[in-house]
Length: 327
Image 1 (spheres, rainbow, N blue to C red):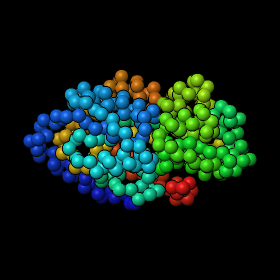
Image 2: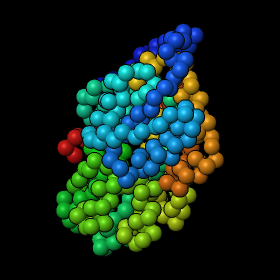
Image 3: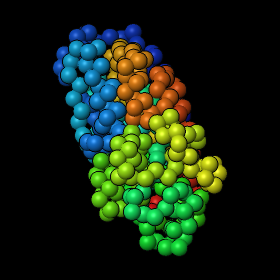
Image 4: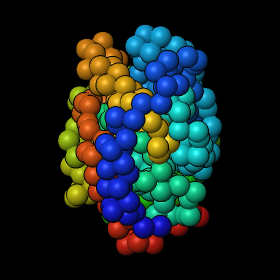
């Protein structure tokens, strides 16, 4: 699928042109609860992030914000649901790099990430952490690479789903290290971490927040973070790039999106409310506890540019490393 910048610009121009046309029904918006769609199961960083930014939104719109879980296909099922929802401001979604920038490079999806959504808010960026079950006798990235080379195809790593950033972080690791390890996809970070702790899968690329408690309890051993710089949440854990895989970087971006053609006054109201939410020091503190960085509001144009840039980046890796849905 080709992302069309021209289509995205038309979408934004239409949004601006329609700003002054306020349907009478929208003057009482919202008059019922708002559905906040999540493409993963409970227990992961997406779930925690959605709860953190959903509660203060309730206070601003004076209606309930109900999280609706629609896991599967690397969160593409949830993204499709949002894209096809009635554009009335009552269905929004917490989307991330996976369904917006990776999945469209791997499979045909029923939505265009630039033209089928209304950008409402940027939330944050987070790196991942490469963790292993403590029974796996490796202490750093180079030891893991050496073990994988000694046992080609015998080790496996978990991710939160096919076409997720966690999946591509693993494939980028394999590609740069020249190793063969099996990908085991889950429908979210929660069940994946449970199986890592239980020993069903020895390796995982996990979002930092959900992994912190397991690391502190000694139930998971961190080997490296996937961001280009060390994480403030794990300052003593070196980056993967530091440990010999030059240029390695895999980060996850969270964004609040609605379906295309939300009436401009409603979209502007949601954007303003989320700017207030993301600027709240209490919200920033809670998001930082999850290992998130770059907690900042961005304009719709900036969000669309980030999506397009990440789409191209991950698309290049997928083609160069010959990654498929079965990888």
